[in-house]
Length: 329
Image (cartoon, rainbow, N blue to C red; front, side, top):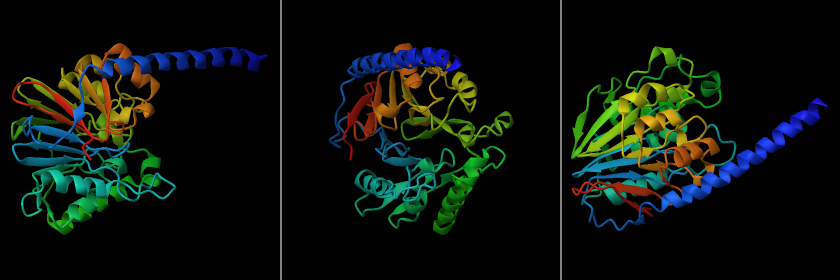
């Protein structure tokens, strides 16, 4: 009898979730038409204040460009992700090729004013060691918070090798002689025409034990009246959204936290940020149903996928607009 009652409850609930997901997908497709996304030509007709969201699958690699200056936020996955049990190519070559195409000078040299590892998950910093060691890349400084063993959950160190990934990045930086800044800037700083602010530069003690995602550094980028927030792996479940949301305030473009997986982009977080555009570093189809619902049905924000669009550039011309282009690889 208990099994029958459970079946009567679970089956209709699953059907309801399925119907709601179909509705949110249909509305998401409608919202996506709000902005015209054209193929990138790299003619810089929209100026050189740009944020490049690379197509590194369900991992993050974001290049900031302004007035000839470049900075790399996260690196994407490398060749060996400890969480994957099958052979995996990774995105090191793709990121290197993109840097050479977009950021190299006439001698083929790439100068990065800084790199930032938002936190120590492999899908964010796994490709950094090979990128750092690449001969034609020079890095002025690296921002990387101290790894906190008290923050992470046991499976993260035991099975995900967070600490090993962190040490490999430090070893590469040491080999290359790149200064490592563990105490991140507490105040906004200029980067070309952009003003950049780091959030969660020191992980609150009350988040200890909530997992490495709670160490995520958020990045706010402003030009004129337009603003962007790169949410790394910030989620409500690690209790970081609740802290950072009120501090960030209204923005125009959101890089969705945690690739659109469970716990990201809660209604309260979206209420604080009110994004007009969202970019997800993942397949659209992999966004969790509740996250998709929050973004589309609640905040009515169009979502653009780096995978579906084969990479996206957000340009910030002096006219004050945000222009999206795709097919950047």
